[in-house]
Structures are given as C-alpha cells and as structure tokens.
Image (cartoon, rainbow over all chains, first blue to last red; front, top):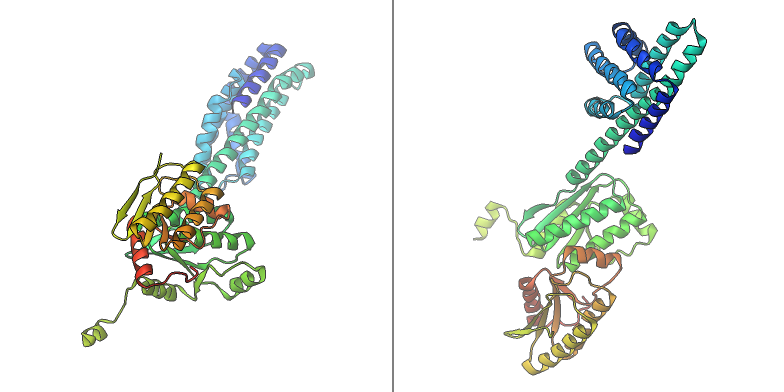
Amino acid sequence: MDTDGHAVADVAAQAAEVDTTVLSDLVGHLREKRPELRQEWATRITDAQLLRVMRPDEIFSEVTAVYDNYVDALETGSVEALQAYARDLSERIVRRGVETHEVLGIVLLLRDVLARALFVRHQGDPELLNRVLDAYEPAANRIAATVGVSFVEERERVIREQQAAIRELSTPVLQVRDRLLILPIIGVLDSQRARQLTEQLLQAIRENRAKVVVIDITGVASVDLSVANSLVQTVKACSLMGASAIITGLSSRIAQTLVDLGVDLRTMQTVGDLQGGLEEGERLLGYRVAEIDSASTEA
Amino acid sequence: MAIPILKQGPWLIASIQSALSDSEILELRDDLADMVGRRRARGIVLDVAGIDVIDSFVARSLRTIAMTTRLRGAETVIVGIQPEVAVAMVQFQLDLEPLHTALDLEEGLEVLKSRVTNGARADGR
C-alpha cells in the first residue's frame, strides 16, 4: 500500500499548496466539534442499520477511534496510522460477519457528516467554503478508499487462511493397518486439490511404507473429465511408488459419467464401498480378519 | 563415473545416486546386461532414489534396460521413485509399463522373490 501512501501525501501536498491555513483551521474546527460530530455520526450509523452485529457501546468506542484517526490523517496527510487501525479493526470485525458495504457505508457517512458541518460553518462565505472543500474532499476520498481497501484486503487474507485450513483438514491420510492407508475424499474435487491430495498421499505412502491405498470418494458429489483424469494419474503415481490403489464409493451417477466421458479406467481397481475396499486391501496384504469365536473353534 | 553394481544372492542391485548423463545410462544398460549373463542373476533392483527428474529419455532407457535384461533371463524392479518425481511422471504421461515398481530396496527384493519363485515372467504386468 506504499503507492496509496504516496498518493495521499501528494494530495496533501496539493492541498497544502491550496491553503495550509484552511486545512489546519478545518482540523482545529473538527477537533473542537468532536463530541457533537461523533455523536451525530454514531446516530446516523445506527439509523442506517449498519454494523448491526455490534453493540451500541462497541460502535461508540470504534467511532471515537476512527474519528480521531480520521482527523489526524487529515492533518498530517499520512494515512499510515489510520491504515494500521483499519487493518486491526477489520481483523476484529471480519470474523463477526461485518460486510464490505457496511464498512464503506460508515466511512462515507463520516465524510458526509463532516462535509455538512463545513457547509453549516461556512454558509455565509461561499468562496471560503469552496477553498475548504478543495482541501477537504481529495483527502477525505483518499481516506475512505484506504479504509475500504484495508478492510477488503484483511477479508481476503482471512478467506485465504480459511481456504488453506479447509484444504489441510479435508484430506487426511489415515493408516488403518500396517501398510494399508485410507484416503477419504469429501467435498469438491478440482484439479488443484487433486494434485495436492496426490502429493500428500505419496508422502504418506513413503512415510508409512504403505502397499495398498484405499481412496474413498463417497463424499464427492460430482466428477468431471479433468478430475477423472487426475484420479487416474493418482492411481498411476501410487503404482510408481509401489503401492496399489483401490477406489471405492463411486456413486452410480459418477460411474455413469466416467463411462460417458470415456476415461481409461483399466488401470483403476474399484470396489463398491469402503468396507469392500478395506477387505480387498487386507486380502492383498495377506491379512485375515476373523471373529474371535470362529477363530478359536478353528484352532 | 560408472555406477557400482552389487551382487546379493541371485539378485543384482544398482543404486543411482545422482542425475545421470545419457551416456552413463547407456553404460549402465550394457554393464547390467553383461553382469546378468556372467553372474547368472535372476533379478535386478534399480534404485532411482537419487534421480530428481525422470524425463522421457530416462524412462525409455529404464524400459530398455528391463527388456534387455529380461531377454538375458532377469526381471527388473525399479525402486525409490520420489513422490515429486511420480507426480511429474504421470503429468507428463511418462509410463514405465511394463516395468515393476516398488517402494524401496527391501520391497523390490520381495517383489523379485515372489515373481521369480512363482515362475511368473510375462504376465503382462
């Protein structure tokens, strides 16, 4: 956000050329009127039904902080402090479900409230009002943009974090017996996830010295051509690592799709459900599972 | 540098520790074919753990080695393919068919034992 910082500095510099005294007078006025303007802003936020997930006292304390940062940014022309505060604020409110339009809404409301205060103050002198607005508006616009961008960036960061967490969580490779792994796939499979999943699976094969892997796709809603091909690739990669892969849980719809797509399934070993897949895997590994009773009668 | 080939019972073991030049691969092929005959070996384990890229030339050479030595009476198993290498190979549709692959040396020897003692040679796998 360096560019924004510079841009704001430029705007502030222009404003300073226009009239330094106007801006400092403006800032002084906004500081003086702080209680009334802050209260009006908070009231208008409530009237517009913004930030409904927050309590009134929370809104008031945030409003105070934003107001002060806003006026400071007007005075110094530097939005860094405000930007840091906006990031921090966003981090707190993103998780509570505050929307982008609400954040933009409250900043624009503050802009309106302050602009209106300036109209009231200078209504007797249109020429001075013009000069004040010339100084105020570019800086105010830039501040609004900064806060909005900070919020959106923070939100995207949270989303990316959560996506990564979901990806990690959604592909557990589990060992059920010595040298037998299962990989239950749940949710949407796209080619990026399929690739990541293959890598995780191959690492697990090496770490556990697995010989058989059961890939269960009961939880996969649909499969398209690229995903089907990545499944075939996964199976081949497993066999390069010396492990056989068994696919289980193909729904009739997915089976139909695979046949219709003409995917080459000769290399794929499939079994109806996870239980059958495990039994097949055990058979390949030479395990025999028996009930205790029948085992003892046999012995 | 020639790749050392170790003899262990009826098996030959060649471990490739680093990327190979084309001529080194051809040399390995000739050495193996020669040793299979002289040492009366029944199987070969080729450990490729040290190779971080298996391109089409290497893949074809590995296939050639296996087919050549099979004609001389020994089965070949490739072991130690790294996960990243496996992913890259399937993406570039490089196939080692009809070669056998196994996880590591120990597994490779198991595969050889079961295949050679069962007398199963050309079952198409």
